Length: 208
Image (tube, rainbow, N blue to C red):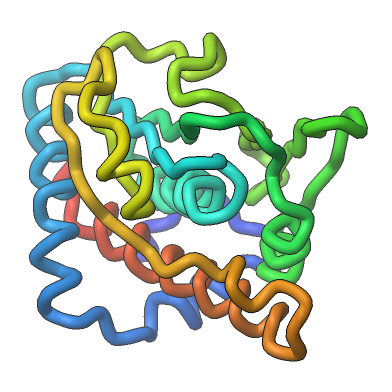
């Protein structure tokens, strides 16, 4: 049976298929199991599932994570709300935005300074709103959530995050180090695809 609960945009569906074919190392699966257990426990108890992906600038890895987690949740029909934030406000890095476009998402933009991007994974679902913000920005409306720490700096420098029920480190290497190099686009796409692979693995393990 096809598990799809939304019809993904055609180009995006191809990227998801590629992501799901990647091998996830055993040690990564062990880290992801904590996130799986949190989501399953909230679902089993009939509580809201709120995930806040946090990195220092909320510009690359946390944005990728929010977008792919929400897409995976919608794909598998898991009623999760995925957010992202940081400890400093910058902007959704344009290189990461271009990578998301290459993945097959449809993207529209509003504003020029720290613009808001609306990310569509389907013709039938509401867009994902993406812009750089603090982890406790009002748009991240959840009062109780899991803080998924996507970078070491934020994880080590945010000892207390109000509202957190569970703090889950799921760290990713920063593609920023390749900015301005010939490898730039490939490295951004590589990190995006890794995150897609892992988020689809997480939500595929949830029993509805």
